[in-house]
Each structure stands twice: as structure tokens, then as C-alpha cells.
Amino acid sequence: MSSVEPSQAWGVSAAAPKGEVALKNGWLPAEVHDGLWTVNSVGRLVVRGHELLIAVLSERSPAMGNGVATVERMARLAVRTLVRAGAGVEARRPDGVEAQRPDGVEAQRPEGVGV
Image (cartoon, rainbow, N blue to C red; front, side):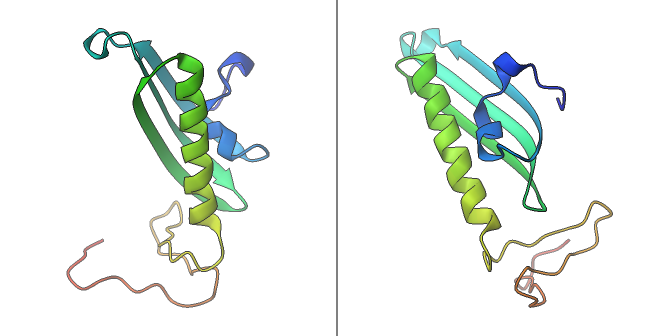
């Protein structure tokens, strides 16, 4: 997934133009939707030091290009929201240890939410 063929470099990777990316895209015109397109993209992105797992699933686009544009727009919106300062995203390092928030405030877990 991290060796992306240039012709397949679309989808959630659009949200990390200069970052590290691993992704899997899928698309097909769905018979059950009268031939409208299902376009999906799932990936791991590293953007400005944030490791993110992003999945965008879409269906019923009139053409594959419309579905790709929708997936990319939603991925960029999600990434922009998640990496902005003070977004309140609970970060975990790869070893599972909770990381400190960018604003230096210790992350609080809502009562009743486990690890």
C-alpha cells in the first residue's frame, strides 16, 4: 500500500501532497445503483507530524471522476480539521502510549471510555 503507482495516486492521498502515504482505492459502477459509481479510498497519511488513518466511502456518483473529486475533497477537509492546532484529537504513538496534544494540555478521556 505504500508503493503507490502514479496513476493510482488519487483519493485520500490528495490530503497529504508532501507527506508519507499508504493507500488502497476502489471503484466500480454499481448495477444496484443504476450504474452510478461507488468510489472509496482508505489510507494512512503522515501530515505535519500527525499519523492519520482516513477512510472515505462514497456511492452514487454520476461518473468515476466525480466520485474521485468528492473523495479527495472530503479527505482534505478531514485532514485539515484533524491537524489544526487544538483540534482535540487524542493522539497515540505507535507503541500505544498516549501522546501530548499540540497545545500542551494533557488529553482527557471521557468517563467510561476505555483504552
